[in-house]
Image (tube, rainbow, N blue to C red; front, side, top):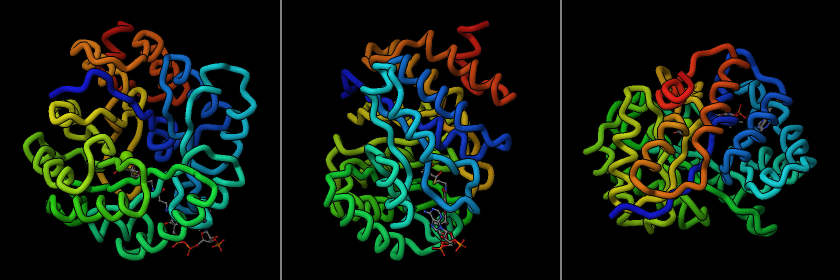
Length: 302
Ligand code: HMG
Ligand code: MG
């Protein structure tokens, strides 16, 4: 049955901007996050501590965090900002920058893991053991991602059992939440549901989030089936920004505006103000000189 409340995890400032050709500056990244918290979002990704050679857009994430920590805005102070850390070096930088939460990321596909973080799934899990050991010493919450949960740009269809296996490993290692990523947005609802059915054999529903890219226009349908199964955490990006640089053809995440509109209509609470959200979507698109990928954003501001 459907949840009464849903938590939105806003990934626009990370997933959304990591592939942005214009390399937005720190001030823009910070203002985006401030505006998003003002619309009521409480959980946001602020950036990544990854190799600057691999993803130059995410350099200076330490400066983004410092600016947020110095912010006088109550909404910013009450929000939780997370950062991606693929290895120990990333974790150490995140700790140095006083990150409140980190996320580790692997995948259900060997080829994608190689292309994305330059190691095998097994090696990634070993790296994460080291991250987890340090994070637990300082009570730093760690979120886990599994990418390519239905389809891989290099390997095609992925077996639900493989997703369940990697997700279970991350959960047992100590991740408090597992986000299931349809990285290339190719999944359709029955496939997505079959994947979730395999995963919930291993992990409690409350510890799962869905992370849908909207490349093929299937994201809301896949989110709908997830909600129907009882999942109450959804990752999304303002204005549908985004795409993974190591997944060819991966366009943006599902737009936060579109998810919030659907949830409002279903009487599911998010605590987010849709009008303010749409204005932020429009603002960031103008800043980046790109078109708004949120249908709701375009309709509401028309
Ligand atoms: P590597 O080249 O194998 O790393 O990259 P290495 O350990 O051999 O080090 C090579 C160089 O990188 C060294 O510098 C290191 O110091 C440096 P050099 O000596 O050459 O000057 N380095 C670092 N610098 C800063 N921060 C670090 C770091 N680590 C090493 N943390 C690595 C391995 C994982 C670092 C690399 O592959 C990488 O950074 N990948 C980034 C991948 C990424 O950010 N992808 C996008 C996010 S995932 C995603 O979008 C999917 C998701 O949204 C879910 C979904 O949609 O499915 C989450
Ligand atoms: Mg993503």
